[in-house]
Length: 82
Image (tube, rainbow, N blue to C red; front, side):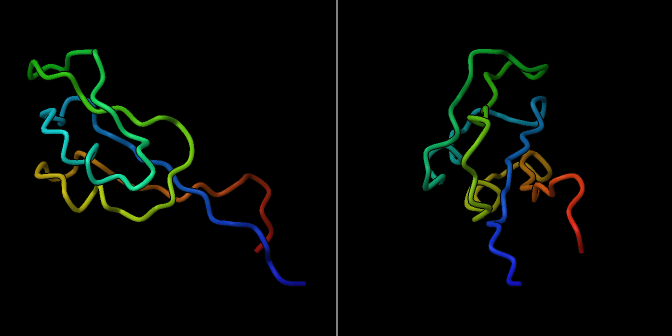
């Protein structure tokens, strides 16, 4: 039987690494990122992920000038058979 499950992803943003340049916001093809209102330890309003719908393209990751600020994570459901 063929596996018909679509891969799911999420975008993790390191709150205190973000400098609010908004490059990720502009790069996201699904418009799932925005500049939030919470201020991080560097004094910037950090980017936020909407919480669902990431396709794992990595556009936000590749355009971010801060190393380690954005990570794309594949969501693996619990109990998945190999």
